[in-house]
Image (cartoon, rainbow, N blue to C red; front, side, top):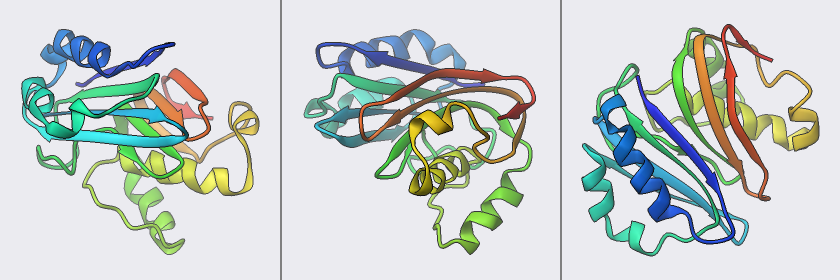
Amino acid sequence: MCGIIGITSNKPVSSAIINSLKKLEYRGYDSAGIATLSDGFINEVKSEGRVENLEKNFDLKILSGNIGIGHVRWATHGIPSKINAHPHSSEEVSVVHNGIIENSNELKKDLEKKGYTFKSQTDTEVITFLLTDFLKDFDLVLLSTSSSGNITSLIFELIIIFEHGGVLPKWVQGSKLT
């Protein structure tokens, strides 16, 4: 089980996300992370352990952005570590996810054949690279109306921020992300 939060505002959101993660910490305390979008760039800060460890991270103090996502993790894939903490980001997207992607190994192999290199042991990083790959040929409007890659999952909650300022809020699905 994990806790996820997404906030858009007309002012910086990192402190509001931290406060929200503290309230969600009962859903996971192996690691925590936050990503914000500022001037078209995704910035990410993650830590192993509880939210208070994330809060002490110097990089968080300089994190700006009016759009952001956060995550507290109870490990289901991969050991508790900073690398396995969410969000998982590329230059184009940042993803927090609560759920289990049943076919992540199959999808990961396909993405590795395309040249993607995975840093973490999590299934969530697959979503990051599927979306990154999809956005090479398509845009956000098409993403919202078409399949992003045959992800099968039992329970699925997802919040994504995009480098150009788009937000896909809490996409919830019971069986297949389509």
